[in-house]
Structure formats: structure tokens, C-alpha cells
Image (tube, rainbow, N blue to C red):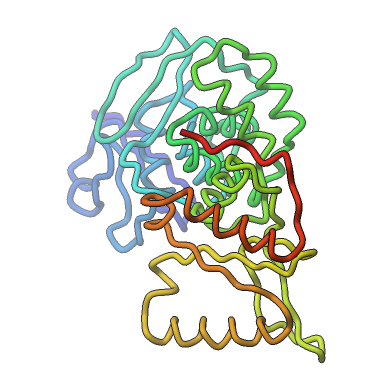
Length: 301
């Protein structure tokens, strides 16, 4: 008699694991990983794929990296094709079906939490893994997003960083951990904030709400300086490129100017092509509005 083992992950995820790949399962369900199937009517998302990979990998595998961040509920998910898992040195490190398993002896049981039955790196360990990756602006965006959606304790992250002084990318993480802002709502905002700070500008405030004389909200700037009435927006391609979007932005900017604010707009294309021009324009407006600084850092090369 053929032995079968079915593991159901609830009615919502509809994942089934069978040790024998029974013909009935093959016919009626969709294969996600070897021996792991899903109800063909289910809308498969990233969490299904991560669960399927963890099921196939078996006991001892811990979801890590971007995959862990997804299970922690982040919204910034870039197009990383790999699902990330960690095993101890007794396990096997390998790749299969867009799954990357890393072997390490530096994952403490305290670094792991359980999410819906899966072993996942906790927010501090996930931040430690993501904050050391390049490019640095993307790493900061991931840290901001993780801090926004979890109970990430930045003091614990700093302590964890201090306790792992010789790890690749640790210097970058030390810098970025001091710059994390859970109010950031997009990686573009994180990138712009990092650019401003590195070019010697004062650290900006995030998500500045502007109201009219009746207390009604008329605008919210991504970044800015309330004292100097300077508002700065990162204009991504999703919300600021259509004629309707541009007309709305123009009306909003006119209303904020009527209240004494100077709205500035920055795109990712301009930050890539002319980062000094971006920060020089902000510095110029700060100077016009009374900010004085003799300590602005020299321009990065």
C-alpha cells in the first residue's frame, strides 16, 4: 500500500503536501514545488510560494531575507526571484526552483519566530540580513518598510549589529540603522532622505501634513522642513506621470504656496543622473529661508 501524507495549511492558503505525489493530487491540484500542491482555484501569491518552498525544504528550514520580510507584512517587495531559506550546518545548502537555501552556524534560536506555523527570522534578524545588502538606498527602503510594519526595535538592532562586528556589510548596516524612519512610505522616499543626509543637509521630517485656515488637510509632503516651510516630494512613476496626476499636483502646489510653503519635486531619474543638483536645489531653498550651516558635508565623490 502506498503511504501518503497530506499537510493542509488552512482553507485560505489551500496548500497540500503529499509524500507520494498521488495521481489524484496530480490531476486535481496545481504543483508549486515537488510534492507540494495548491488548489487550482486559489489565487497564488508570494506567501503561497514561500510556504511551498518551506514545505519542500522540510524541518529545520527558516524563512529569511526578503521572504521573511514578506511574511512580516511589508509592502515594498521588489522583483527578487529567489525565495530565501536558512539551514544550520547539518542541513544542505542548495538551489531549486527559484529557492535559495543558505547554510549558517550563526542563526540563534532567539533569531527565529513563528508565523502561521512557519519558522521565520524575527524582525531584528531580518533587518540585519537586509540592511547589509547593496545598493544601500534599497537596503534603507527595506529597513524603513520593516520598521513600519513590525515591532522592530532599533536599539536591539544596534546591539545585534554591535555583536556581529566582522560580518560582510556591517559598516553599511551601522550607518543605516541610525537613519531608519518607519514613516517612510516608499523606497524612493528612503533613497531621497539618504541622499539628502549624505550630502550634508539636515535630516528632514517625514509625512508633513499641511492644513488650510479651516484645519482641512490640503497636502502631505513626503519629506521637508516644517520650520522653513519647505516640502519635498518623491514623484514615482505610478502616481505622478499622467496628465490628471500632474494637474492635481499643480493645484496642490499652488495651494501650499499660498500658505507660504515652497514645494519641491524630485524623481528617481534625476537622483540617478544629477544627485548633486537635487541636493543643491534643496540647500539653496534652505538658505533663502534662513537656514545657516557651516557644517554641511563635502560633496561625496
